[in-house]
Image 1 (cartoon, rainbow, N blue to C red):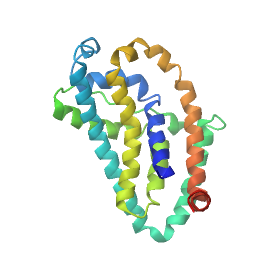
Image 2 (spheres, one colour):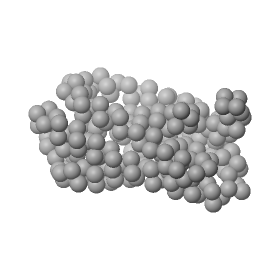
Image 3 (cartoon, rainbow, N blue to C red):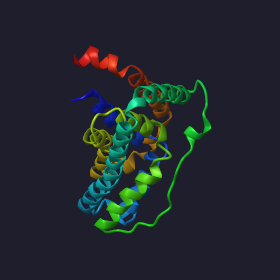
Image 4 (cartoon, rainbow, N blue to C red):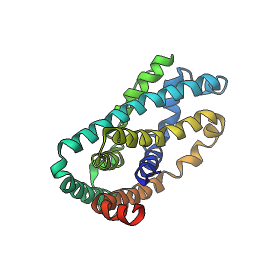
Length: 225
């Protein structure tokens, strides 16, 4: 598999464990299912189905974002290398900020949407679309790195696939939480202890993506020639 798809997937996983998604997972699940946390454990099958539909909703949103990235990249083809270098430098600066070596305030903001659970399968799908928009400001650095990488893709199909893998990185943990909801609720406090380390992992990821944008062609020749 192309390494860019793996990077996109792990970018999604890191986004899931970000401070604006992981602590609110029980709330999201309550919105999706339309029931309280106590009632979720007795209707696991329905919860899993609705979570899959929810994941489908935000996967479609991110895939369309990938298509727009590829289209933008083809439109600005002449400036693609220059934009990649500028984007790579910006991502490295973001990564250094996440490592705590410097601070860029807007990278630490959170975006939360207050909605009431609508219930139903259509409601789960629409919530997937809405939450994708709400997450975007929160996961901007990592999402931006995947978006910038998508602008380098030669086809809209690959851009869509790249952002789909990013969505999959968020969706798989959501599915696993729904599948093992009892275990997750019992260990919520333990799981939250990893949040301080997510910032460092995000920083390393962003620096890695920045380096790939700066020297992507060189790496491609070394590893895939």
